Image (cartoon, rainbow, N blue to C red; front, side, top):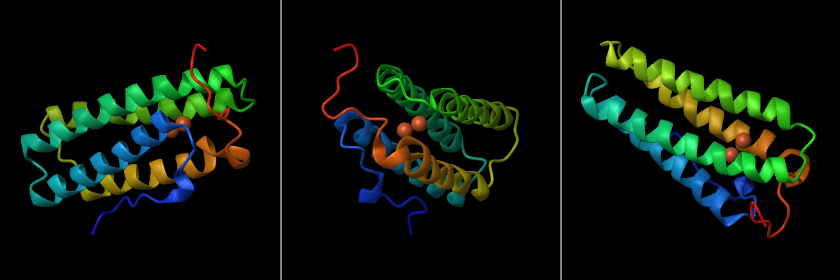
Length: 137
Ligand SMILES: [Fe+2]
Ligand SMILES: [Fe+2]
């Protein structure tokens, strides 16, 4: 069973953000499967790398929207992004040095993304997102 389950309460209405969020859920599930199969496998390092790259791309995109919408909680929102990015880097380093990634790690990401999207990205009913907004427009 997938540990990160996507549902409509995560929809912001901004297509690129919703696609990126959904892709992050898929990668977390793939990472969880790889860890379950063999957490010493190089595939785990590969999926951590994919997750780190997708997360970085997503945060960059999202932060453009958040900055343009002059969101009041921007500072604390960005701090959450930075903390997750740091956690990913720490795990990648640990795994590269022979440390094992436990199943709890995939669960941590599943819970982090579900909580962050529902409670932070969608704060105040999704007012972070200007309808039809395009960064730079
Ligand atoms: Fe997000
Ligand atoms: Fe966010």
